Image (cartoon, rainbow, N blue to C red):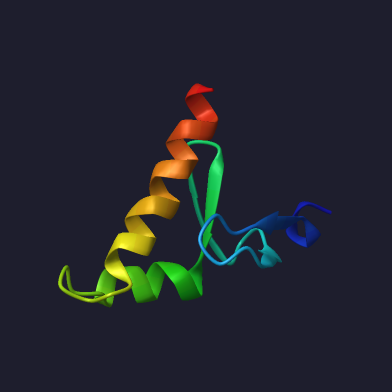
Length: 63
């Protein structure tokens, strides 16, 4: 069944069910990471990490 399909989160690296997040290009971001990303201030130490991980989604697509 499609609902049971597991996807690898491009941010945290965990496997989640397909319906538990968003797909971007060929990547996947779980709901937990998505929620944390939208609440993270640009001055937060974790912000550059999120930017780096998001870039990897587009680098993989264009490689």
